[in-house]
Image (cartoon, rainbow, N blue to C red; front, side, top):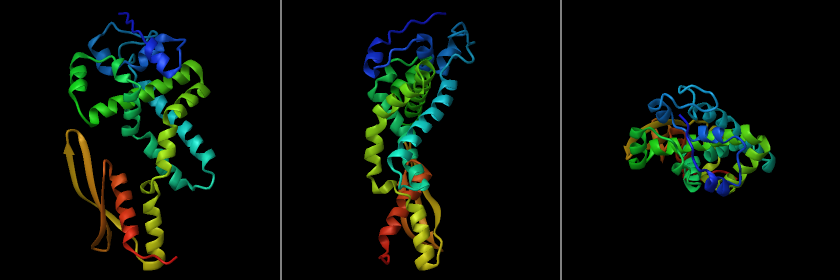
Length: 245
């Protein structure tokens, strides 16, 4: 089964013209399409592996290296915990899905019939996951087709504004570590965190976490992940006290 997709507009948008068009097709092939088309193959792969899942695996690592390298070099005075938090924020599903949407990647994804209907009518987590996975698969495809430096230039061109904007957000500081240091030093206490509530609206998780000193809840925070919620709760707790200078 041969698939022909006109990627010319997309390649013009990204500025990257692929040498291996089948690799590009593979980056946009969802597993549901391969599952419904047993005769479909790309670059000799069977239908079991002719989707973008393996590329997504590689793209996650390539993307992580590019962002880590950028942060490490640009912010030499930031310690590991802060760099890790900023990297996590940049490569999280929501951010990558937003970027994929701006690049209109959704117009080129090959879906099975059922998944295509679900994607087009879906809102929230499932749709975001597919878009983010496709972006990671595309980064891997660029890396394999044209090398690390082309992949790096593309990623930074697309994501650098997210990186620099996020670096200025106080909520991205390692508030948990800072709170632990301050409370142990000045209060001789160690904060603990407890999930208070979890809700899901249209596929979007919202988690509420409280930060406790003993049995007393000092502050709470909400986020799409427990880690985010804990950081926001810690940030609010830091603002509760008048710490020594």
